[in-house]
Length: 185
View 1 (cartoon, rainbow, N blue to C red):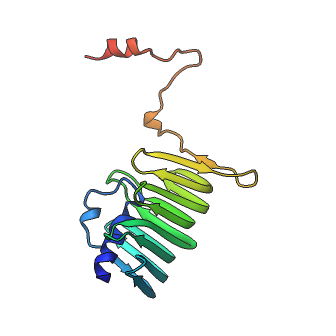
View 2: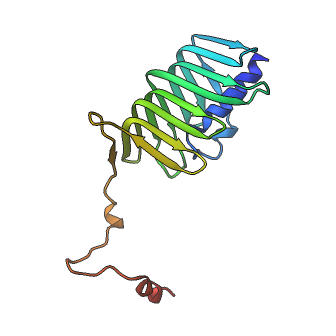
View 3: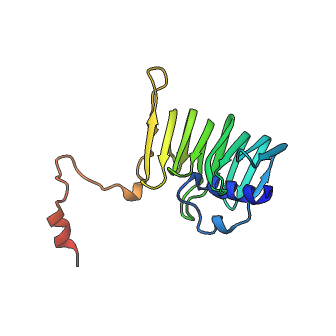
């Protein structure tokens, strides 16, 4: 019974990014920790010490992981804590590895929301988000970052590659939709 819940727990924690390599979810899940407990009556599993979860390109490391399941074994929440807890995954073959870290990473399974709390950072392909709290709605694809007066939200976007830049002269008007349509075969 304990092992069935581990698999359910891990399968629900693993969508910490909505976009993963297509075969990541088909790969075996490996979890290691110094200690693990599961209470069938409360539906709470707790892993402590040097937690390392891997599945395909996905890897999560944390100091503590607590997962709550309902009476049917479906995951309600997963909370990874660390100084910081780390997450990484390659979202697609043509993309760089996405990394995230925070002192607390919470996954609300029913709502499909991942929240990074305390010193939250997200990075991929030169772009980054930093804030006290970053939430990501998996279904809607919305990201919300929160800060305060001392720790404002920071967003960094890399410049477009030289190949993607258009050589324009000052005063040139951007092409209109009609001009673009006229040029197409």
